[in-house]
Length: 178
Length: 293
Image (tube, rainbow over all chains, first blue to last red; front, side):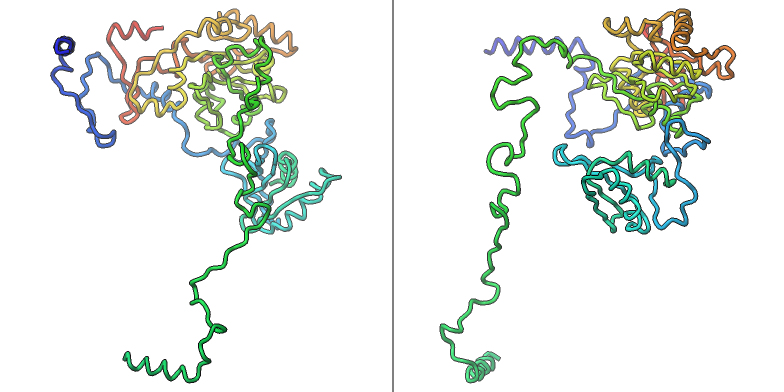
């Protein structure tokens, strides 16, 4: 047993001599990442050149992401099918704001382990009951033999509809410039 | 004081009815009435049934048949999905989505579009550790695509290439290895790490055929063969090929990366210092040889 220990010790001292930096500096184990000290004076043995070229820096700036969502382009026709919100919405009894990404706030929520689908319209301001009254015949027409199940949450400004009608409602809202 | 209350109590006793079994009551608050649970199990099952996965809400994984030899393992040889856990994935991005990103100013079409600029929009994500290797540009919306772009994707089909070239644009398919992708998914964070830009590795043997194919507009293909194939595709799909040489944006459309390069205009091996706005370039001969293309 003792002979094994001396043998191991000999190996350890040997390897430490092979790496003088390891031998000279004792191992430090900080209690956590946050309490550990900053690394200072890292030895850099490679030759390098520090350059400040505005032409090269343009390529770096191209890679940095923008911090805010930009305003969409103003085009006469949008080939992608997206439409900006109309400007003539002040005289309407209700208003549906766009999201920060300039999209309509109509979402599909899948519940009950994928068996229940609900369409939710958010960001409704003004007379939400009038919106429900306007929307109801359009959706009832789509569902014809079945009856429409729709909930209005006036306080939160949301309307929840049973079933997946996201595209239909987006079309309906787009027709009315929302 | 004490005698006073005792006197008061005695005074009251004169007028109060006599204490007997008929008017004894427990002191207020000492007894609480039990609530009656509603429903079949009085609410103790919380609507989740009795016993098994239903009660414990630990639903079985897909295809598991509670100890039976499952259907998907019942037949001995089904090689279609062999090695599916090792295959490269290319999460799709449709041309319609791409057009929407350009029209909504999320992507700048006046500069070359690559994986970094698509990821910087924050509307498309990849996870390289899940073997996702970049964009698969799909042909949904190819008919309405009208933006002139110089785009670099990781996978594209023939109709997609045709749609982009018909609109006057240029498409390249390029491969990035895992380390390069880790640097690309958040370029700002990568620069903040103070690590040299890695050099791009060559594609693995099973991908090299695709990326050297001029019909796929591979980045390793011969440029002359690519321009030939552009003409062939234009004749096949029946559109007039717009001439890039006469385009006012010729320089933008012909900007390409080196096969070893990850970011446009930045050489592998450089260290970008965002704080001092300087670039550190290695001068060691050995390093220069390592990072050379």
